[in-house]
Image (cartoon, rainbow, N blue to C red; front, side, top):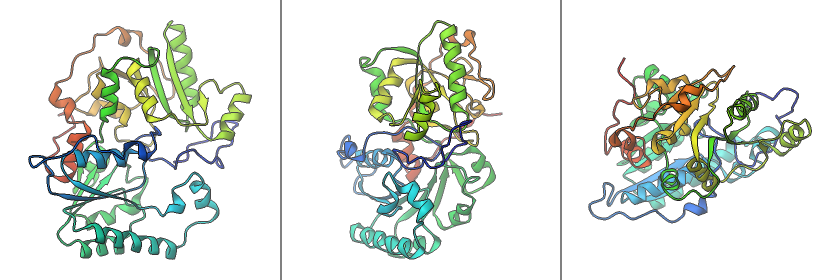
Length: 382
């Protein structure tokens, strides 16, 4: 997603190292090939033993590969498709969409090919579509006709406020889930199911530290007011005599302009690989979370704090709505005037119940999404 320009810096024509992001996460993990081998294998007692799953996504970094591998670990056979034609997947895709938008005919031909490939791999028991921005009603109808026994599920990890054209289309699915508590409240058929923390994050935290330990860590795309927020927080952290790791990534031109302007200390033009990101999270004491101002669902950083048991300083007021929240673990700061509270740093950190933490794991997410288990009420009782 394009953010607001940093004052005095042009950003609109940057060609990014990764495709445009949804706002649920802005970490750029490893290439998908790094996760081609499943983490394990199911057997006859696995929850999805003998089941076939079709996963249609948007090429959201390697998160969909991680989801597919979790389904395989649970025993399923999984076929993965990308709703975007190949021309919209490479580094020049954002520029292509502006200069030479894909015609309706090109998109229709690609969806016909996707449908044919899926039919050859089926029949499927479950079809999970993540977002489905490019999948129109005609395609979903054709998919249902080709897979009459499949349960077709929609998962939205972006807000309908940003994609209102998708709302009406959700009536075509057997099951609709959302990461956004606001959409859950607004649309009766939207089931609340926050995203997840990945097992690699927990594994890295439990392993020996591979990088120097720091007190604070933030990694993310440079958008909206993040640079100003990082500059303010970095100064405060130094005044407290503490250490930090900040990594803001953006297009090459913006990175060079900020370097020349003397504001590029923590700005880079290459995204941080997910394996390195996991190491940095493992090495820090406190995660910093600076979500997009339009976001009303939880960021994956918040759930990584839950999964790793680390403290978090965040500009998101939404974290206080969820069952994991405690002021000892989550310090909510003002996005316009971010201030670190020294008393929060010294407060003891309460341990969360293991069953509560497990509910935000990738495994629990996978089971809830397919309806093998029922999502619990994630929001705190008021």
